[in-house]
Structures are given as structure tokens and as C-alpha cells.
Image (cartoon, rainbow, N blue to C red; front, side, top):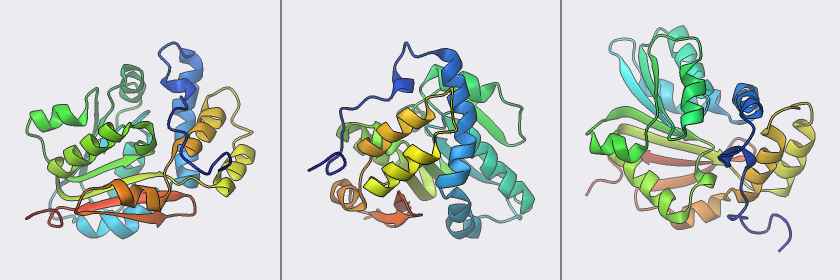
Length: 233
């Protein structure tokens, strides 16, 4: 089927290895902000999907699952503050290295980071108006994906948005060329591995539970959406 005809679910990203170079890993976390601004399409998602649910009249809460270095949580906080909205954001990641990097960043009002899993928050009885993730789905085994979807549906009061890469030969070629300047980190090599591991919209639609929708987002992303009322009996 060719290099990208099927998911390469067995490929391992270098930054996920426990013995990866810590300095190179931190440079990778630092460069995530540039990559996410350029390709993830979160500003459009904020304006079209999240901003209509937010109001200056009352604070809202958002959970960022698998927050990595924390750049998306900080971007969302900045956009909300610019719109005069109080948005309290919790970013979680089970990886101690990601948590340490995120927690070491300059504090931003309304943003906190925890080393935790979504299952732990469910066990604590937590709930948030909005639950999101970015570039997380392709990392998960089939069982882990189903657990994440179940947890995020329980944790959300209103909407869940899981944004992830969409596998294609064009995405692979463009990222291979565009990421060349990002030297000294795992961004380029791991990004190409991520594309090989990622789903198409059709593949995601075939595995999500009732109440979830899969759709294309931005040129090279898939979006899973769950509205809190959609999955209720």
C-alpha cells in the first residue's frame, strides 16, 4: 500500500523514549509553539467552536489533555484574555518531563499544569466546560483511544475537541521540507513519524463511539467532536 497507505502504529517517536536526550527534548517542547501556530489550526477552532460558548459574564473552564510543553494552553489563555473572557485552563500530561517543562514556564493567570491522566481526573470527579487535546490521538493504542474518548466525554460539561494530524503523502512531503530549519530538536523526525502513525478521517469515523463525529479540519488535520447532549440516552 506504500509508505502512507496504512497507519504505521508500531513506529515510535524518539521523544517518547525514556532515554531520549533531555536537552533536545526541551528544545522540542520550546518549538512546539511555532509548529502549532503554523499548522494545528487552533485559532480557527477557538474562534468558530470555542469562543461562541464563552461569555465575559462568567468564568469558564477548559481541560487540555496531553498538554506537552503547555504552549496551546497558554495561547488559548491569551486569546480569551484579549476577548475579555475569564478562561481557567488546566493542562495535564502523564509524562513527568512534559509536566516539568510546562510548570517551569512563566506563569499566566488562569493556567495551571498537573502531571495526571484523564482517568485520574475522572476518579476525582472533575468536570470542565470544554475538553480538548492536540496531536494526542495518534500516540494511543486502540484501547487507550477508547479510554480517552470515554474519559473526555465524562469530564466535559459542554464540548470535546480532539484535534490530530491527518495522514497523507502531501502532509508528509510538506512537513519534511518545512521542518528542515528546526534543527537541534526532535520536531522533524518525530513529526514525520507522527504523520505515519496518524489516522485519516474515515479511519477515525470507523472507531469512534456513538455521539462522536469525525471531520477534516485545516488542510492536514482530523477533528473529533463530542457535544455533551449528543451522547446522552
